[in-house]
Length: 126
Ligand SMILES: [Zn+2]
Image (cartoon, rainbow, N blue to C red; front, side, top):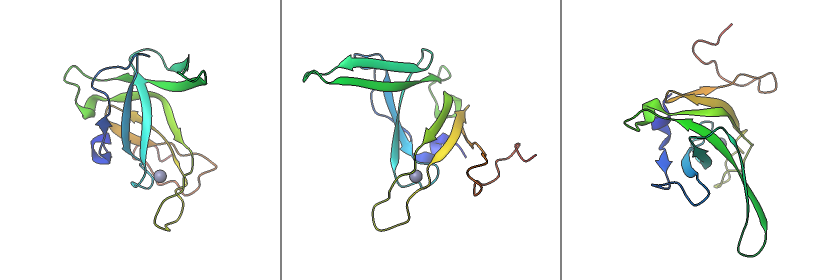
């Protein structure tokens, strides 16, 4: 699956004052919750700051690489994304979360021992 199939939106046209932008897209597992990832061109890390009320804040920021035309099919994020399980509105079952990569626009789920129900990903069936 391509990231373009999960309704990606770059929420900020330009990096904010802390240097990152926010990307949102539909959770690959449930396609109901919009998940948000802070991204920048620098190595992944954490940004810490103090807000106007004096509260300590931090944000994990992922490294993003994208081709010169900034199309979704060239987007790669690192490291992998590990989304916690989350509740869904409307009385549906909770989403078990999702762990995977976005590489060259492809959304690739990581198969792990603790998620036996993970579906096969092409190229990883050993
Ligand atoms: Zn989900």
